[in-house]
Length: 160
Image 1: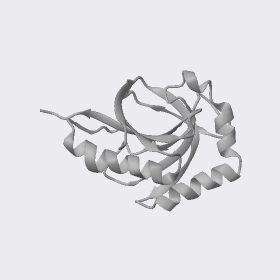
Image 2 (image 1 turned 60 degrees about the vertical axis):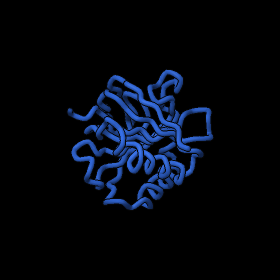
Image 3 (image 1 turned 180 degrees about the horizontal axis):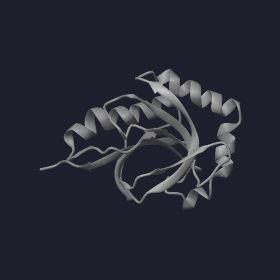
């Protein structure tokens, strides 16, 4: 069973590098992560992060799907990023504050993330009193755990 919780956060700033995801092609995510791991970008971002215990995500690195323009359009910019105001050679942007449904995937592999996302979209969201809010979706790798990944779904209450 995938654990979930709801959190509320203010806006926060991230810096990262991006690629274009052209639909539901999971290999594009994996290829970009691999490229950033091999060329040192991931390590640069992790090193630029402030103390993860003080970060909103409790992470040094995350994946951010910029779906806020239209969450139903699964083609979007995908960032590998960190919570920081500035990282040389990276783009900075603000993640708008609000509520998030956070789903813990058991493990840190891509399948754990996919299982968490599927639970969020296929089971939890349709039966909840929430809808997808127009903010980015985030994959978070909490520092120090090494045993799970989190999928952050931006949510807002359904209109009555």
